[in-house]
Length: 452
Image (cartoon, rainbow, N blue to C red; front, side):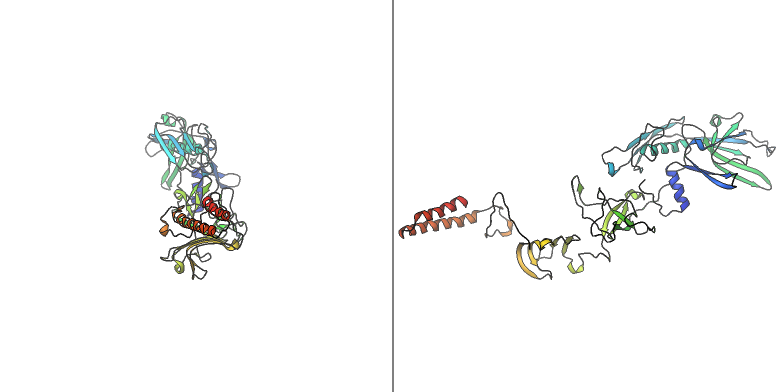
């Protein structure tokens, strides 16, 4: 797992939940060497306690002769799920199927399929393997089916034996029903006694089988609906550039986290939600150290966090406030800027970079103090400028009101040129009368005809 989160749980609740998620049961026993209670954690039948045998014998009234035995068996049978199918999504391997389907062999009456989506795992695993890779999809599917099979038969017995405890395989001796033939794995043992009454032991369990193991009831994870505050964290404090991995993910430090972790290692790498994304394209404006972000959780799962959005705060004020509420601003830390003014009658757009104060300003032009300094458009730089056009450049002073005509509409310009040609022809006639060089005039006319 990349992360395991404890959220609004006691330490005991947290441990019990983690154990239940991976099918680990636990029991206690007395250590004869050190004289202390010992906790045994296990996830298979190998750690059951075997060779616990008691005769199955109904007591005669209230007298049992002080002989330890079991009696009054009761069984409950139910139909359970026949197959468990799981599916999850892992953005790290987005095109890899994440399906697993498991059906554990058993003598239980089963039917139907239980489909579990978003069971948190990172690999599908081999669902044909009776011992699939830990915490894979096949692993969780098998665990869930084993939990279902645990419910297929329930057994209740009474006894007067003080040695009984959960985790034992009780083998009743004598003429017993089929459910007791292979033994009973004890899951709950309750003792009741007093000075004026005999010991009364209530035993609950399920038939022992080698095909599947007892699995504790799965404890639901706490959920976080909404977001939690955090800050972007880099390897260097106040780093002016974003600290990203090869997938464009960030490190953060959650506000509630009290651990004194090394700078840049307080939390796992997190994806950031963006307004636009795709193969080789998208929208990503990198976040730098100290930026406040909100951490959201997929489907409320405390172990599936991601960066939902970034926020301004007292340390990082908003570029748009009540003082300039008519503006729309996109500004980077290096002051690359796209500014769009929406104030009626003073609309303008500014696209600028600090290098060479290179700017493209259009509309109602203003200075740094928001005072008017012109109208129309301005392309300026303190550095060199080049206009390179492969198919031609049309520059005209002809007005095209409200941008209603075609971009290359030259009718007005051509009319003006035609007037110029007629004037040149009249000039030629006058020049001939003045006995000027006709060739010079012809070359001017030819230039106009070829280029314009």
